[in-house]
Length: 561
Image 1 (cartoon, one colour):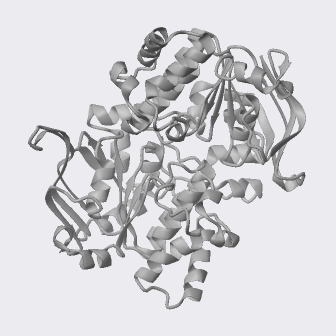
Image 2 (cartoon, one colour):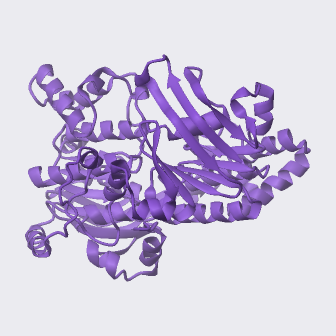
Image 3 (cartoon, helix red, strand yellow):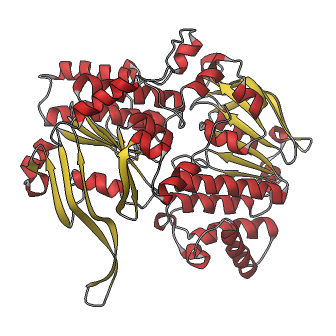
């Protein structure tokens, strides 16, 4: 059905340094699921955009063919490719928030595709959209139809994109990172949905992801991309259980295992440079017990007592709230110096609200928060500003947390100036360059702007900015969710190294349970604004008490190896 032969793509010039795709060969038969795996910049998404003929103007196809049902897509005119796109070939884009038009109702966006390709009237298109929304398990489809994208959760927006992609029953569906940053339960539902749709429609599936666990659950065969090339391919079981290329071995090795604990994550560079150390040896259990005795013998650095935060859902004619949502519902817990407390739960459970309430970025309705015996709730603006030097946050969304008009070097220097750190600008610049290098970026990135970086790179910039103040306590809110597994391994190792070096304390919020287990001393599970259970990380994973925790753990993708 789809055969890519000797495809090479360059950007801006004919220089080999700008080659994004280099002599790629891929074959996908009807009804087959092929995984395309690799890090950001490996060429995965560029290959997918080439199939859709949606490459940006600066991209130049140097060589090759993209044959779909024996027709070379590269040679088709705009009208012919437009008829194929969305009809015979559809794509689920990586970021539904940007792929959906923010000023058009969600249902209408799907209906327009149906009316364009099937020539149906509005009434019939509406009925088909409602049926599709039911098919992808969207609640209240009639309400979703009338909703705008900003009114929906990330998982709901992703289901809208899937509904749009399958509206015309395509022969080939391209899914570009469709589960990135979704909760494990929603992620599992999306995977199950795509599997059933593939079987029902008999369509081919090209599934692109940097998440090896997700890839292993949904595809028949896999192709591994590195620097624009396919370095290894074959049956998923064969490649994952017996990888041959150092890059593939590194990709598989640097993902935190969910079934056991290790001291330090391997990094891909070690495998590429043939410098692999025996990093996966089990940690010393006794040393971990001794560490925990030391941690929990101290007084808490943070005490949260009876914390509440409610949001108004509806009001009457007089402006009085008639219904509300308890995002954080009478929560109490302690965090100890030098501890990493993992915080898990589905979207909407209150994780982010809790994290922001601790910093008073959101004002709680009730309760108390003590940091080093100081009541954060009672602090005035000036005192709170000083306190935020010691307790800081790595935000979930790097897009909104960086000013697009300020270079990343100056963005990191700015909080240093506010808190009068490191003496002068020369010293501050040297500190920033060191931080950039620590999180996997380069010295020359100092003067570049946020739009010049990938999502993963922007997340690393945000982490560097947080570390610039040398805080004692850091809240990591999905800090590594957008990162490739190799960069993720580097950042997680970095956070652990900084914890050991400077005695940092973390609240680590994540939907990735394998990451949470690797990072955490204790884990706190949240649901509907409440703490479901809290305890030692290994105990939570090995012997969860609540059915909800069991469900979360069961939803985590299991690697074949």
